[in-house]
Image (cartoon, helix red, strand yellow):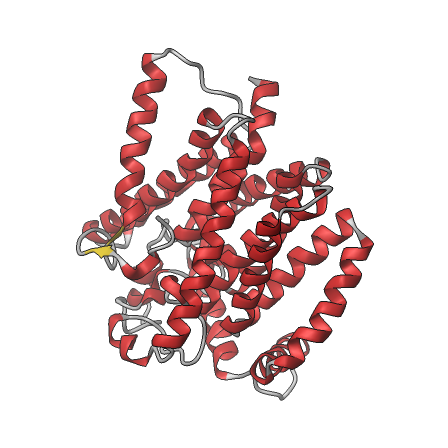
Length: 396
């Protein structure tokens, strides 16, 4: 259901309506819980269950606290986003409970197939609808000539494909005879990422590949370098984006007189707004996903209908601003525990791929609100559940 992406939205619910997964997940969770309770099965001890529950608890407290300065209806609307996060996080527990060692390869292949279909959808969009400026009135960014796919955003689909590519590469590097499907899938997804012209996606993919190569194979690292040297010169626009990334980073780090491009400047301003909100609410934050309402109250934005208004251009800063330092810490602990588990078990395909994928997403989340993006959350928490199944069986 992540493949249709933003093409299908039901015209009710929080923000700009409900996604298909928003409707499907509650049904899945209810049936799972009823079946589990009827069978009197115990809940397994999971790798990141505790920090996830702690984060959700802090998010609830932050929302209650925000009633002091926000309207009740604004807090209630924001709580729907928290319910959405809980639903997607539930995929982690459902996967652990329902998917055994025998079925893990099937689910893994479905995730890779999802990435392939997203990439193909992106190529089709690039041919038939390359100019997204008519969609600006609906709150979408006016991208032109970039691969957006069904997610309607080059940065998000680039980050999602970078994560899935890392999963596929983990399998390729651990199999004695990698399947042709995985090799073709990796080439398709990498090409799709190239045509997003997303600097954050380029950086995420590079981080994930280097991480995997460092853990598993120096030969693979050498192949990455050669591949980059060959691929990047094939696209003048990709070269320009990489050069822009260098100068934007240089101007930000060294505070030179050189001005970043418009996109980078917008991102920097977004970071500043998040930090400003955090300084005014330093303990519990402004309240989970109240970001657009607080920005509007402070006069920092004028259009709360924009899809970009619900968070900062950084997941980490968004979580810090809305749930405070304890919320950010518990959230990061969940990711770092999964990363540690993946590194420890790097000789196995899915842990190796997930380790690379997490490193990619963490870097990506510095520049994009990708860790809270529904379609990425769906893929991520199922993948995390696949990795955690062996841990849960051992500690149940």
